[in-house]
Image 1 (cartoon, rainbow, N blue to C red):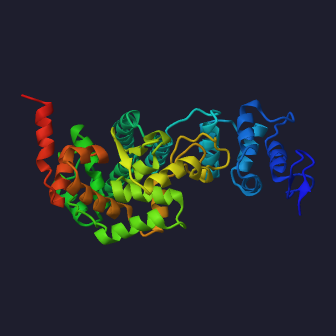
Image 2 (cartoon, rainbow, N blue to C red):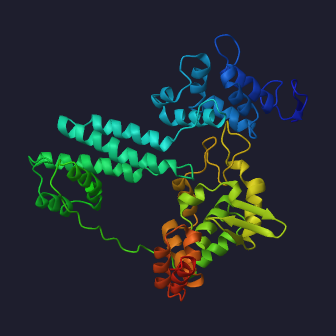
Image 3 (cartoon, helix red, strand yellow):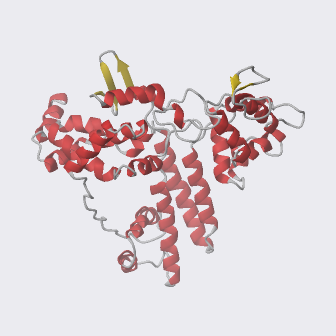
Length: 419
């Protein structure tokens, strides 16, 4: 039954007595975010307005009623919780607090920070505090601060994707703690550790034990241990998606109308252009160029022309498909090609991998197959630019694919750098 909203006069199905869903959202948002003085704090008004302007009012209403982040906004508005990163870091609902944090950052209420780096610092602090042995605790603390965090910060300064990779750094600290625990259980210490001890450690455990490499290099540099040698960890080439299966999945992504645009475009960027999920997830709108002549995408420095029908899918995604992935409290002007559920942030690589997995896409195997195909079709120097890898790596792929472009990079290098 259609009724007229008593607030805005719009004829629509009413959400609550006398109010449409849009006006009900405005009332409930104001009610939830009113401070002790009876008004919404000025610092939070921009967030209030963003929730009220949600493109999906009923979804926003459900979030206000049931979402774990809504009570946190109420705490901030009431002044019982400081509007700061530090206060959100210590909240008992960390996931909800993180969502609210991104809402505040997206609207410039809080200054943006490197969340991955902040997470690494917190986790390392917790890990160090859990070490019972004083000397080992001091050693790991120094390693985590002066070697691990320093390197990650340096990498973050030059990172253009807005994301800092911390898994490897985190594993280095955990590897150090596990090795020291193992030594202690054998009544050994760093100072008394021998190459035989290290060899036994590596031979009697999982491959993750090789994560101790950086720690032991650091301790030997500082005279905390003798120089110990860790042999290279041999890895195989990994699985590669069968060529026929790859083309079958590409065809399905291009032509099946039931597949969402996000999956169509992201999946083809992996399957056709050999792009890693981490790069696809962090793509921004300015990497896509739409002109009367067609569509191009920039993975590296040079744009690549996108053929049909993928070009149409990319165009549609840019124009209309992204709005459905913008979360509560997000801005309407998201710069990301694949917005995530956190306001102002892109989809995560892991979530994107899960989505593609439902269509039978193993991202790593698919990327290897695409690399092999491209290596047989394009010069190594072009492949290196497209994939963002070293020319030497691209030449190896060309040889592995049986391509005849192996000498192209060397020739070009010679031409560009005459002796």
